[in-house]
Image (cartoon, rainbow, N blue to C red; front, top):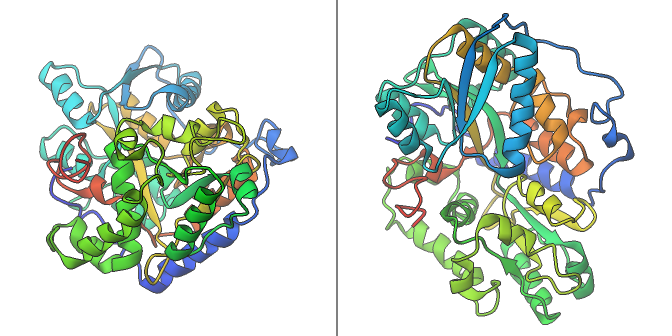
Length: 430
């Protein structure tokens, strides 16, 4: 969250490439079914256990700390990955719950002389800031080898600062999705939209049926910036998106006004958002999802925008992904449908044989496969067997992410300087 990642990102996708990726995603998500019968197997449907591919040292007696902002199911699932590392190496790994923004949390830990060995950083800007503060340590040869074998160049590059590799992007997100209550759509006679105008028509159809069209988790600023970023990328195009992310054009640029004006067609419409503007600003992200998939024939809203990770919250609402909860790509607002991604990178803060071994493990398909089987997770690791994901919706989203290669744009607020980026109550979030 310090000076934007102009040096970190070399993937500059052409509009046409983005259109191809978005089109492929649109096709892949259409009429997705529920959990496959074969997806319930121990190995997520492949019928065989994945072979171990990464060699790890024996670390008996070693203790590591890993800090991340993850909570609930996400934290519990990641702990299962750490448990496998413990089993293979003999090391003990402690998960340290971090507050957001994690860079501030880490600052207090470093000042107290107790930094965690590894931190999971959710912004490219945060990686650069950790490097600038001399907290972060470069990845060793074994971790680099895993990265080069398993990751596209684009995902490697956003973990680099000044040409050196510091981050392993363990977790990715497809942030160009809108989830919807299938029953609410069926009752209203609504169809999945492909364009922004069609989305507005669908919203009106749902509204006319007696259900509020949208649920918005406005208490969490990042959900609001994600809405804006999808509209801006589609409407203004990838070149302007990069310029705005790097502050090469001002936020008073006419392209920003145009995107905000489009956004107002949803947020500014009376009764289109559950609880109105005031209610949305008091609704956190998990609630925005669960209230869309509870309430039977009268949910609080029919649609909720957010990434693939919303599946965790959908499951908590006791709704079935692919049956009760369906999904369509974020509609095309301009020339192409947007492809916005996010992610969390493992960064070594305390350099040691054990810390480097854990970074190597997290760069391997072995680690990602464990969490892939548990659902609510996507890996940018192209060596993960697609069959590891637990249902057809998840498998197709994972395939679309991998097939995108370098043709995506990373979350804008995650790239910006801390004062304007992914910081609660500040800048773009505010």
